[in-house]
Length: 92
Image 1 (cartoon, rainbow, N blue to C red):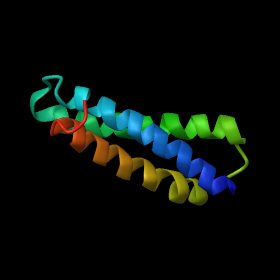
Image 2 (cartoon, rainbow, N blue to C red):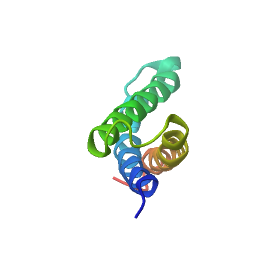
Image 3 (cartoon, one colour):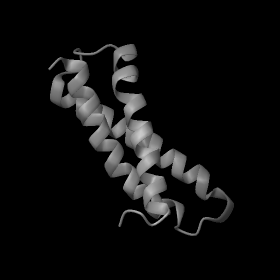
């Protein structure tokens, strides 16, 4: 498997983890700011997952464009899907 595929797998796993945790941030009782706090939490999760991927595969392995395409997009799609599933009570 190529490096972009491995990066997508790592970001998908990170998206699942942070998507599940985002429900707790959203329902923490922040009122009108809960949506903004949740999106910021997902963005911080993307940065953390990106740094983990860089440590595992090497910092010079993927360019910024390759990382965003192969990591950022699967991360956000899976994180939003798992967030919605947990919020609606389908999971957990």
